[in-house]
Image 1 (cartoon, rainbow, N blue to C red):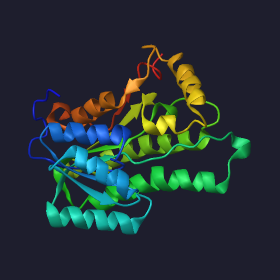
Image 2: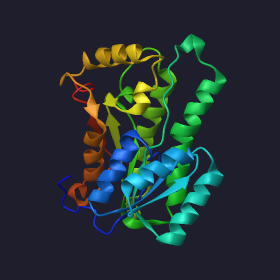
Image 3: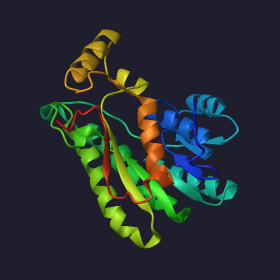
Length: 252
């Protein structure tokens, strides 16, 4: 991996950093010179991710929808490094149901992790974030599109994009930049896990690819490179935006 040390000396937190986009981004952050804290709910996956990342990473087990877990994560970071320069609030889930099948549990689970989790991850991290820090929140193309069967998931992602706008204003006195990143269909374990079978997964991906102008799935590292841009001084005059990394899916 060829890098230019764009994050040399920076301290970063990646929530949901054990697989997929989160892990790919943590790998990029480390390669660019950052020390990275990652969170994850499952200890085995967390340990494996930290081992893959090496000595410049620490894992903190926890669920972003639990304020107690977030408090413990922030306390760990404060004790070990004292501050944060970059926060990538990435942890989230996706579940699909048509509106006539939506349940309270389906609604609560996604809003608790995807929205509540990001709100309080950012709030709890604020005392550690240096002035001029970078916050990147994970939205999605579905926040701007109207695909059937994913109304609740899409609503969480639209809320996240809105939060990025508001926080840009809330935090401008501290020169903290807040940006949302919105991937299109990305080849990740999480995406494959949405399907009931490998055959169904391939059918779903083929359907997605058919409406992507670049005619392919994206790779997790392609999102990671865009997050590095938003985390680094390369984007020093960029805040409040939604950066689509979607092969053109939401653009045409």
